[in-house]
Image (cartoon, rainbow, N blue to C red):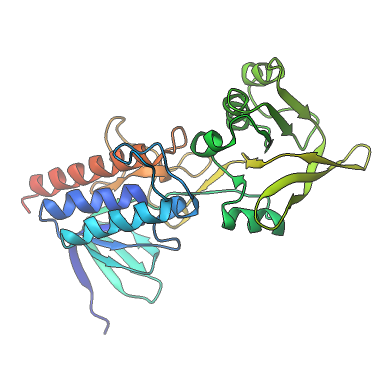
Length: 316
């Protein structure tokens, strides 16, 4: 018979949301247990420079910042474990969760901070420069600053791609936008904004074949026009992918209300509450609008405070 572990607070996922929730929960004596998930530290571990998080005047690397957040959570005695939750059952008052090796946990409160994963094209060359931090990014707001007065390429056709292209157009000398189909998926107003921006060059029916570079840094992209089958090279120093994000929420779908793209819905706007009492959400698993480290950290704080109040009302 496997031993069932009963805990006051389970945090699923790390990253700014999970670690901040852990810091608040631990200081409130909720003795939180955190499972770090597939990518300890979350999306920020793929980000070289973080310059927009308050309190770091000289900037900080993503991995370094996550190590500092983890150390802070541990200082208040958060039980941080590697591994991930593969199954949950929230059908009764007690929240049952199972780890990948079958360990069963019953938690009075659960904070979901599983985040989202940026979608990439999956090209070998793209992944090469993404890992090196040498010019591939899925966040213009995070990384656009590093390409000031340079030429960049952005892939995508939706509202967020248009928004990011417009953002980059203010920083970069030229933005080339690659759209796979012969039209935008974006709303009319966003598409018009991009079309009316002088330094944005739009290529329809165009797909990326390869990200070009010198082994360390991106120097251009090789593309193909699907209607003419013509290949060409576009010089650039930055390659931005804006084809969407996938929230890491599939494991909760039978119990937690999700929107059509898989983001967790807040049961009460202005709180971190989900449709299941005692289960809270923080960070990018519910946020498809801002997706910044600072906003994730803020909702991590909210989730821990909501969980603490929930436990207090239950008489814990």
